[in-house]
Length: 353
Image (cartoon, rainbow, N blue to C red; front, side):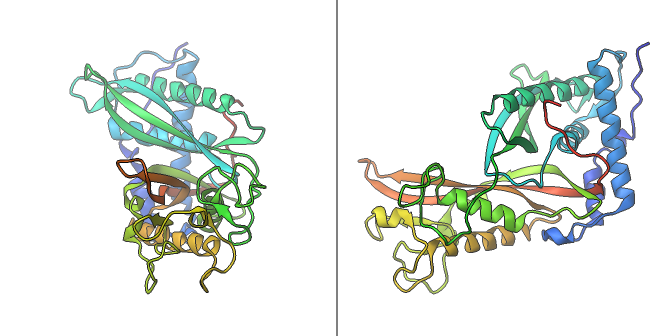
């Protein structure tokens, strides 16, 4: 017999806003604390959505006229994907981003969708992410977190499009400590002796920052990352992060790596971020990760209840009109989240399980 949909506190779906009041207003991972009432409410809502989505996939749901507000849709899909499949606190060698798009028909008026359609959208997102996961050619792989974004309307304005960004961790973390080896400035490149291939300074910085800033789970507690957002604009201009009392010489001039030919020629020496002492100044491979950490921490401190989720250091070249190398730099893609602490009663599963 097909089941009818019984909404479980849909009106309370935007629980993220209520839940964060149980956390201190800063981004220090140690300040994410467990609240039993919050944890139980969160898990109950997610499990309701999971069970109902499973019934819908199995064809056990009656077509219903019940609707769900758009903001509730975003919350449920975000929270459920990250609860069921997200290994947010696991370490990995690299972070790989893949995007899938899911559309949901809108109820007339455009501010809600039918619950059946919301459940179908969730199931579709899982299947599309599963295909991305299977396609990754790594023996060690897992979904860390999912970012859900509003990608706007379909051309006919009859449906809303959700952009689902899966951040997949791959490989075992074996990164050396920053400062121990000199690395080329570009992502996925090599050390300056070209012995260790496929890993440049940005890869080393990401590993350091993730280890330094990620929240740690304590005994009996699991941390669920929700309401994930990606910030790039705040870190797109390294020159806004000037190193105090430093001579402008293309060497640790800013807290994010930046070199310009207008200061001095961009040579191999410029592009190799050294681990040793140069010009009586500290190692670039020691300076930059510490400085980048301070930049990220300062920005998170301005975002109430938001915590670090992941970071990608991006390497960028800019050329003059006559194709002469003009600037090289690092910018940041920071993913941040509201973190909910729940009982460690159910571990996440791989997308193929």
